[in-house]
Every structure is written in C-alpha cells, then in structure tokens.
Length: 451
Image 1 (cartoon, one colour):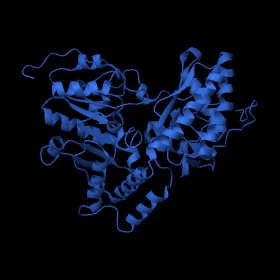
Image 2 (cartoon, rainbow, N blue to C red):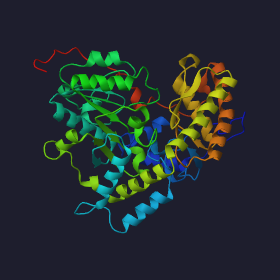
Image 3 (tube, one colour):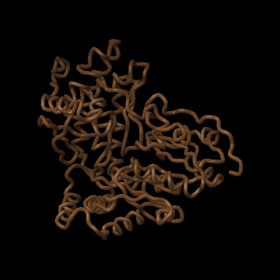
Image 4 (cartoon, helix red, strand yellow):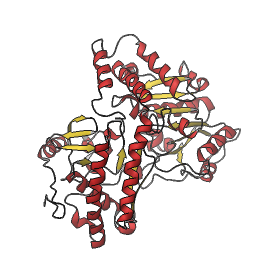
C-alpha cells in the first residue's frame, strides 16, 4: 500500500492495533459490530481506523493513538460532544447514589416534565433504551387504539419484526408479520393514499431525513390520518433535539399523535422516549404491555436532564445549524469552483450528507476515495456531517481546508475513468437503508368488511 498521497504529501495513519482488534472480533461477534454504521463495512478497509479509544469534544482518538475531527459523533447521540462536562458531572453525581434501584426514582418524573415542556403535543412520556423499542411500542399502541393492524412506514425504524419485514434482511420473520407492514415514498402523498386500506392502524415516518417536505407533505399526512382514523407517528431519532429543541413537530409546525426520540437526548447515554397524546398513551396503564427493567436507569436519566437543560440554555440547535451551514455552503462552493457538478452537500444544516452522482462513476467508490483522503487530514467521515455543540470554528475551517485538497483528488480520479485505482483498501459497502427491497410497494389487499 502506498501510504503517502504524492499530490498532497499526506500519509495515512497507522492502524495496526485496530486491525488486531478486528481479527480478534471476527468469528466471535456476528458482523463484528453492534451497529452497521460503525462497522468496518462503512469505512475503507485497511485504511480507516476500526476501534476507538476515547473522545474529547468533537475529536475521536483511535486505539492506535490517532486523532480525528469526528463527523459521525457516535452515529448521532453526541449532540453536545464527547466528555461534555455538565453531562459527565451529572452522571458522576448520580453514580454516587446508584444506577438502578428497587423503587422508582424522582428523575423519571423530572425528565418527563422537562420533555413535556419542550416537545409539542406531549401529554405523557415513557422511557426505554433504544429507538427500536419506542417505535415498536408506538406501533403496538396504534394498533391497540385503532383496532386495526397494518402499518405504513417511510424511513428506518429499527430491528424489530414489524419493520424489518419490508427489507431484504427479513429472514426469521413469519410471512403473516411481513404482510402487515408496507412502505410509501417520501413527499409522495399519492403513494400514501394508494397504500391505505380499512385496516391501516398507523403511518410512521422520519419526518425528514435529508430532503425537505414539499407541497405541505407532512401537513397532508396529518389530514389523511385525521380523515381515516390513523395514528400518525414521527420517528424523531435524528430530528429530535437537533432540528429544533422540540423536534420536527416544532420545526415544521405539524402535530403527530405519537413521537419517538433517542440519540441526541442524553449525549451518548442509552435512553429512548415515547411521547404523545394521553388518550393513546394511557393504554399503557393496563391494556398494552411495554415495561422494561432498565427504563428507569438513573445514569441515563441524569444525563438526559443535564443534556436537555444545556440544549435549551445554550440554544444548541441554532449553533448546530450555523456550523453545519458553513460546511454545507463551503463544500458546495468548492465543488462549483472545481466544476464538479456530480457531488454536492444536502440536507438540514444540523445533519448534512455529501452525495455523488453515478454519471461520474460508482458513488460508493467516490465516497470511499473522499473518506480515504479525509483520513489523511485527520477527519473521520462517513458521508455525513453530524454536527455537535463541540464542533469549533477551527474544526470547520480545518475541514473546509481538507476538502480543498481532497476534492481535486476526486476530480482527478473521476477524469481518469478508474476511481478504484486511487483507493488503497476495500471500498465501503452499501448502507442498510439502501437495501434493494426497501421501497417495496404494498401488495394488493382485499378491503376488510366493516372497517
């Protein structure tokens, strides 16, 4: 492997310790990762670091001691940054009293009250540990509340049976379960109307990913749900506490019946929130079962209280937008300057995505090359800019300076007609969200009498 780029003179970091840990994991840990987005398939194999040792602010240090400006930020949870003092102090203070108890803890009430103040349309709150938990609970509640069964979804909603049945990783899920969930296309209200039948209990979606709603799409969904007696669920794992403090409901001015949160709410501690209308959520009192031993785990609740207070007091969503806008606008200006109309940066500023057009060759190869070259500059990047409150002006300036050196390398590779020749390891693999069957259209169904 040629570790030095002869054009820039920059060398790839040594990653021997990462590779050794990876060898120990292979065959022991299925897929060698707990989260696909963190796994070796999302980084250029043999080039990128694989294991982290520690983090500080917006910087990550791998097990070989290399330092990177991090734009993955734990795949979303680190809204404030690594080792954020206010949050870590709250965790330490709570740790002195205990973690999990034999009785409920006052933090359960305090955090729920705080969430009710901030998240629109929140009349009740339930905790769990992962986003998949609360989206699944929301679907169960919708079915119980409406007495209907089928679900329409758009986006990624976790690993549970009701959702994964629409993907091409659906082995182990009975066909009758698969036949209860169908997908629709974002910003396409006609695809929603075509999918609805008399047995539709819920519509669940990420209110935005990287594309903005068009033609009042979210408001139209609200109207459709009201007309057909369908529960509207927002999966706000990415939008919550980032796009606005109150998430997409606040930002777009649209009401969901249930809203699900995780990631940014506790700055890296495992916590998920299910919020929404009291008349639906009250079914959890005795009719719908959704309980878990660790739902009231106090370290995560202490972290959430400190995180939410900091997000509110420092107006963090505005800071994320300002810093993210610098990257987005700077990248697009540079691509235009270089005449590279096949790449751009898109999305809401708190979380933007660099995209590549197939007219210039394989998008995955283009992404792999940019990732590889950014690693030479000490930047950890998987195509996204997941902004945190710890991303400083210097971090942004250094990243834009790196893009100024990296994009000409991509341009040279594209014009050579052989991008793969410039990649010094195994290119990244397709991410899970883009599996081939994700946009499966609903099957024709017989209308259920009496519905």
